[in-house]
Length: 212
Image 1 (tube, rainbow, N blue to C red):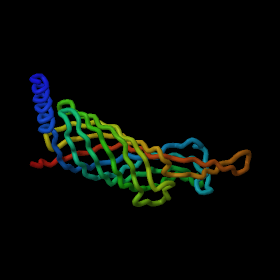
Image 2 (tube, helix red, strand yellow):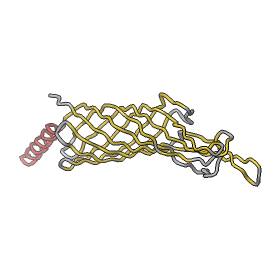
Image 3 (cartoon, rainbow, N blue to C red):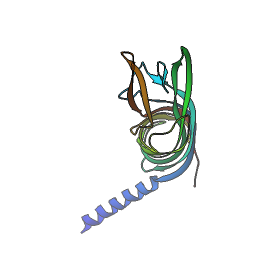
Image 4 (cartoon, rainbow, N blue to C red):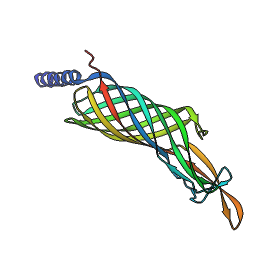
C-alpha cells in the first residue's frame, strides 16, 4: 500500500511539472514568398501559348505572406503551432510571341490553415506540418482547384524570446494551374495538356506576444 502511495505521489508530481511547462502564446508572422508552378507531367518546352508560337517556361515571382499563430508549448523541445495565413502565390510565365520575348504574372492568393510541429534546440528550431489552403483571389489565370493540400518544411532562429527569423519551403499536391499547350508536329498543330502545382520558398519574421 505504501509503495502504491509513493508511486502515485511521483506520478502526480510529474504531471504537475508537465502542466507547469505547458504555455500558450499568440504571434504574428510575415515575409516574402518566392513562388512558381511546377512544369507538370506533360510539359513541353516548345509550346504555343494561347495559339501563339513560343518557348514556354514557368519562372519564380516574388510576393508576400502574412498571418498569425498560436504557439502551444507542450514541452521544452516541442510546440504545436496552428496557423492561419494569407499567402500571395503563382508564377511568372515566360514565352516568345512572334519572336518577341514576353512574360505574364499568374497570381493566385490563398487562405491557409496549417498545423505546424515545432522542435526547438536552444535558439534553433525545425518546423514541419501539413496545411489546407483555399483560393481567395486570382489574376491572369483561373485556378484549376479551389483547394490545395500542402506540406511545409522549414527552420528558424529565435533572436529574442519574442522575435525570430524563419525560412520555409512549401509544396502543393493538388494541381493549381492547368495548361492546354499547343505545339507543331510535322507542320500540324497538336495539343498537350499539363497540370502544375505550387512550390513556395518563403523567408520572414515572427513575433510572439507575452501572455501572463
